[in-house]
Image (cartoon, rainbow, N blue to C red; front, side, top):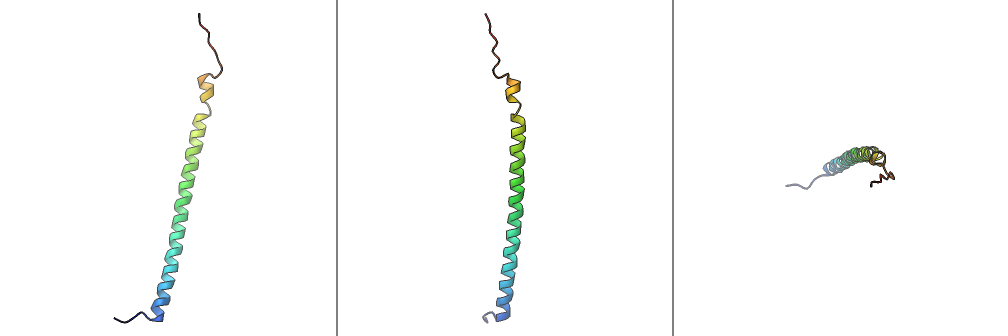
Length: 65
């Protein structure tokens, strides 16, 4: 088997660079989606939690005999 020539080396390097760039773009998109989902979850929990003190009646003391 013959060792790869200069054209195969250049093509392999170019293909490696293209695949690395594609992987970086894919990872960035996945990270952006994960960050958006985390932000949505945080906003949803904050929105649900903001009315809890009002519903619970914080500070209201009902005295009995």
